[in-house]
Length: 438
Image 1: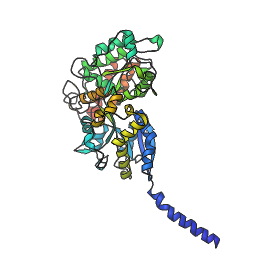
Image 2: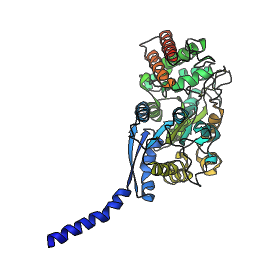
Image 3: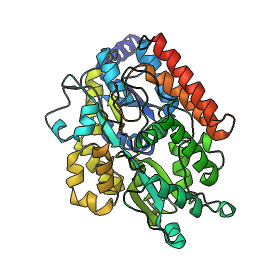
């Protein structure tokens, strides 16, 4: 009888416990291994504490790998992820394919009207928000004030390429392991191509003409790539063709770079004494220009989105509202200080005296974001939307292939002319295959 009673009690316990198990929702979040995302993971306990019925599993990947994984998963309806970290390039393309869930239930206190107009436009399709910006960025020039002072140089707020090139050569001290400039060299449409396309805009280049003919054989692209390769050979660090955002961040923070032109989001890391050895010696300026009316700065946001195949939409919406809402900004400010909150997404942040007091880069970040126009990226007319990319599905493949060619030119395994010829050929082949040109 004891055994029978015990069995019944056990069954009753099992019956009672089933509902609590069934109510648990496990979200799988795919994200990039950038500092702000790592910080979000560390703070996610705050979310699960308030939502004990939700657990969060992280899949953290290097940028190029993340793009491959989430693109493959969503295109094949693999269903591996419930929340995706995607860029402004993917959002309009995937929304139009009905691959994303519209985010129209983020809550009354989400205040979507507070999102910066440039960033909001980039993640809105047909009047609906399809991704919530976690942080937004443009690019700008970060530099070592102590090295500039020692060399008798003064960084203009709006430097020209001629000034940057001259200063980089003067500031290079290879025997001391200090290089005049660090720039992205790692192949990838979101790595070296993000920088080089933005740079090319400042030299008057464009990815495609009005009839979608690729333009890598233009004089403007030759000027861009020649200037970049020559500058990096003269004043860049060794092995630069392997350096992306994270590698250059580490170099700058360890005192190896006199200048670094890259994402505005890096400003909080290079000026954080817990992460940077040169935190108190960093100045900021706009991205360079060539006098043609365009600075070499891009526009980007890392966003959180829900794939249409997710079965956990309600929980995913809760997580996204938490991670991209004003409350998360206050949480980071309380734990890490206002200088370390995710930047570039909300107007209210740039009106917050506490943030402005500790973020000397805020004014230039906002000015850079405002100046990047995805509808008019070049001084020449273009048929596409996007500053450092063309928002068409074919660009991902073209950008990857061209980025490999340009990285080879930087490493010396190819010449500038050969890289441009190969880039033009690959781009023409893909655009013909896709039916844009004959």
